[in-house]
Length: 178
Image (cartoon, rainbow, N blue to C red; front, side, top):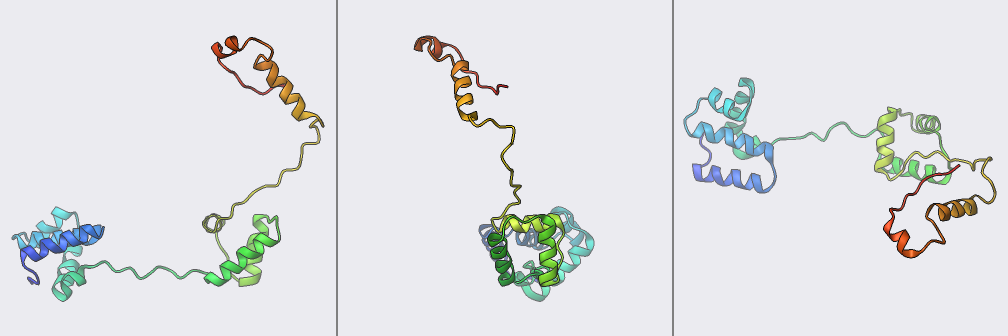
């Protein structure tokens, strides 16, 4: 069916391009190829689709014009936790820290009767602005005056006490010392 003139079809393609609807542009180009005399198979080959898809797109065009070709997305699977439950969970994590990954999984399962794959849960936590972190205690071998020792050694490495011109000519090298 010719729901639009060729000029109207070109305008629909332009509007879809401006709206950044690449999938709709491709479908409309398929229809344009049909308008120009291609068979369904030829038009499908030009836009890179299978024969079965050419049939579906042609039927969608015949039934609903441009609106019939608009890709529809059902929204995907609903989230396991509602936004309110997720917010409550994040507040719990912020209040009672630190949490181990096992404790987080156990809390979610006990409280909401829901399980998440560890990789997915870490993605969701990062999206919420949270990250796993390991608290590190101070090294018991660290001397009390470690900052002073570091400053002294850096001073020695940078050649404190030499003439300013000499220091500027030589490259600065920083490193760790034992």
